[in-house]
Image (cartoon, rainbow, N blue to C red):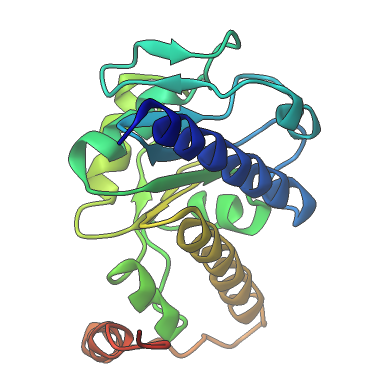
Length: 220
């Protein structure tokens, strides 16, 4: 990759990251500057900066770090949740990470240890979505709890905090974040009916959908 190609790749990745960050706010998955987004590009990790309104990001230079967390691009301070993002990239082949404070998902994180199997799209995450133990934001402890919850999964809830989803692109990470929030809302609605318990799927039923999703969508 030439220097110009590398620069073009980083600039396009930054534009995509900004667009995704704005979607999280526009679609109600975050409030203000809460939550954060990152993407792997040209050997770097591009991240949203700390405490900067998303509408301002298009006017800012890309913010990027290496896998050791050393800032190599930009003047703005990276997100305070940088340890969380780096933990995902060091442990997986993920290309993107989306972290939100989605209200229904956060509510569910205070009630259960994993999201009950209310819908077959749990398969999109590899199975039941677990809840990571609580720890203060931005700490190595939170990152460690998150990794435990993400074992063989592509998304988890953070207790009393929000969601983390990774994927092979910003689009897939965002889409599954929105899917997770929808499933949490569905379970809260179904479980709130007095005197009734929602029917749940078995692990075997969800496992069948895991296999089916591997061939889902258009083929080249």
